[in-house]
Amino acid sequence: MPPAPRSDLPCGGLDLGGTKIEARLFSPGLDLLDTRRIPTPTGGLDALLEAVADQLHWLEAASGQGAALRVGMGLPGVIDTGGGPAFAANLPVGGHDLPGALRQRLGRALPLLNDAQAFALSEARGGAGDGAERVAGLIMGTGIGAGLAVLGRALPQIQLAALEVGHLGWPARLGDALPLLACGCGRSGCFETLLSGPGLARLAEHRLGVAVPPEDLAQRAAHDPAAEAVLTLWADLAAELLLTLHLAQDPQVIVLGGGLTRLPGLLDRLGAALAPLRLGPLPLPRLALAAFGDASGARGAAIHARDLAPC
Figure 1 (spheres, helix red, strand yellow):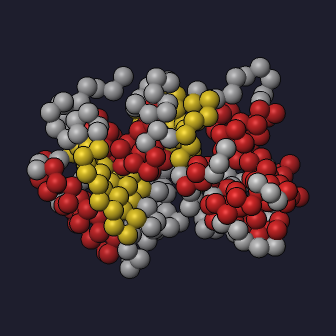
Figure 2 (cartoon, rainbow, N blue to C red):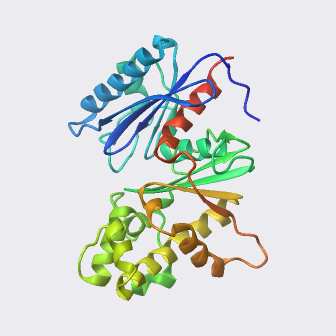
Figure 3 (cartoon, rainbow, N blue to C red):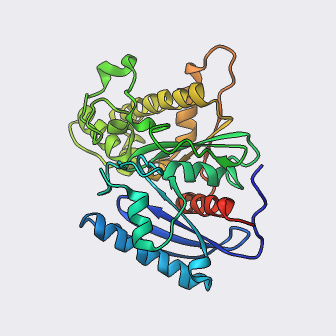
């Protein structure tokens, strides 16, 4: 089980995404004390590092702990904590030693975690997966990513390509119904191209002739069988990815996060699509929505930093 953290100090989490950098300050009991969100700059790596530094300094000041505050950061993509080049489809970090660049700019090393790993860790510790031995997190938003927490801990080896499930190819059985689209990773036919928020709009455009935002598509589906058929096809595709997580990692719970979890009736829709895919007598994992919503990634990053800090 995770080591008991110090009970008298706050901790902070940074959630670095393609559109925003979220800073959240938590109490020793992981209650949210304060939060600050700024847009992710688009001017290259230097501007990104400057924005992260600004958020870190805000956390340090808000906590009253200064540089002694334990802070972790979650970010999308492939992170090589050993100094190799990073990759993220929606951040200007490609080819750079991101941990080294951050350490040089910030004056200290931050524990880094893939954002989906941070999300899974948060939901395994007091969240929708609390008490389960193996908790997978699946983020369905601008992109698609997955993470895994085992016995309430993030797995340190899952920092590189493991669980970059958005870049797996979707199944042949759905091939005739799906458009083959190029992905930001350089491949074609990745789950992310159709399963993400923008991907669902692309799927609607392919089937209906017009791109429809997910929230509008859900409203339209209530009275339009063609729109309902798009959501049914999307759920079939999502169920295939859930099955892949189930067979590869055997989680007892899969917690869903990201903007697409706001679709009405999502759990029922995905559960109905997943049930026919069950392999023999194997029990399917329980599906759940994130208990901590948008805060879960930053919360998981803070937990990770706290776990690594000396007590």
